[in-house]
Length: 302
Image (tube, rainbow, N blue to C red; front, side):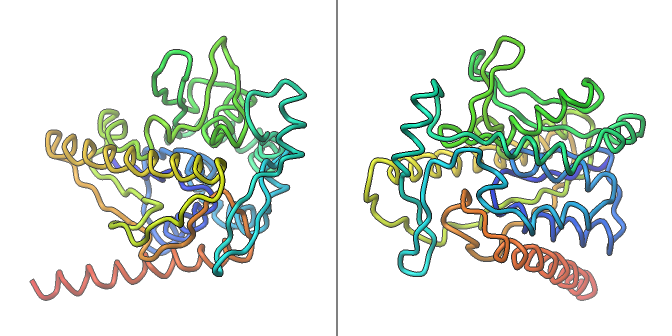
């Protein structure tokens, strides 16, 4: 059985879309499991349906307003890179409304409903493929994997949205008596879960370079210090997930094929620039194509 896994990574999900497009359309790979965390959860349903162009349109047309109903930061250029600064007015307004986070991402929930229809949901649910999204249950301190086979349409759309909610910058969601947040806080790359469910070959798209390529700029405010801290934590979670996944693969005699980003795409994946995301989609497609050609050349030499 085969599994496609897409890690968390915010706007860098466009790169994953390009890689997946090559795997599905050019190599004609078919998967039994599609597992996504955070931005990966937004991709997996349409990839399972082979509706690549539809999800590509979504990823290459969004901006900050498409995601945030109340954006907690401002975007400014610094040394040629997009950096975020706190939007004091929006954050204060959010707190006065009783919110527990700096910003809200309710626009993303609406967008999910627009691009992922109930008809598409029913088609997937009645089919042989299993679509799974990762969420973090903060009340019970556990990671949970939500399968499309276990829920109705509105609930599953909620779980996709919850998987993407990178608190404290996005919405903290209370559902079924528990508080939930971004799946990446618990399982950035759910390789172990895929193998436990029976996958014998895994294609894992990791929205990070294989080795660190930069040092973060010194924090200029508590807000940027917080984003740096969370980025560090997510990097370490990702590293541990991959390490555990490799161990599980050896134990169960499974194989894993990794697709890392070949270059540093951005230092802030909470910035959604549709022109850059369009470019990253093509970068992902070209990278997967080059990787496959290189693999074939190595096999010929052997």
